[in-house]
Image (cartoon, rainbow, N blue to C red; front, side, top):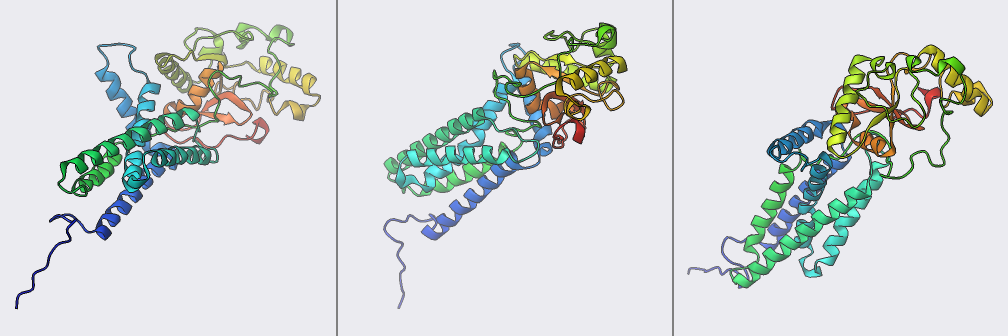
Length: 358
């Protein structure tokens, strides 16, 4: 006697069983979360080369239209693309819940990532990233919703196309793994905000010091916007590699619409001593002064190995991209102070609390 096995009425030939579909979705979810986690929370250096290559490629494609594409625009698109698979997968898993819940989960995931980045050296949390991630989630949710609606209307088994959707999610996530790195060293400074508001700082350079406050000694007038290419001792006295790195950063910042200038560079020992003496007068003791201004024999400015950057938008820009040039924020209380601390594309170490701890 021959026994005939019949497929369930709602299952077409070649369509995986419910348990197998669940396994594929779990596998896809793990792949997406691992890739997103590595990109957003992993070591900053491992995506730096890929990010630079992608930016260079996009800029090359846009060469016939100068000024139409900037690094920040490329990064915003990459951050959105990173979360397209997240939204698509969430919409697929939660297809009976409607689009709102998957969108909310994508946004919540982005917020949690940004909060985690506050505790990681070399990571810069940013609400702009949350907005881009949420936009990508929305695109993913919309794409999956449309695909499922088309599949249902086709009447050829709504489940069959889902295998292709899952495969596409995993493939798309892996393809953008080298693109969507959004990391750099330094603290988060919201664009346009005052970086120094409510924070103590070094004494004004012109506060005292008499004859030491001259251009020849590396003095830069308070508020002066000194070009990184200026032919003055504050720039020419810098270590050659540091000067080149700052100039390269200044060019790229300009391409991104950010004016990066030097607030202070090389200083003579006499100038540094004058700044230190003024700080002692301001803070009441040498130890308190050293939290902001070091003695000449301790200062990296005197050896030409440090530079102070301004304005606030430039500090913010360099906090994100400084490691691409080897430039790292050295002190936690001086978001303007940068030194050449790593190889280009390396991971900057966490800054010391202040100059006394350096």
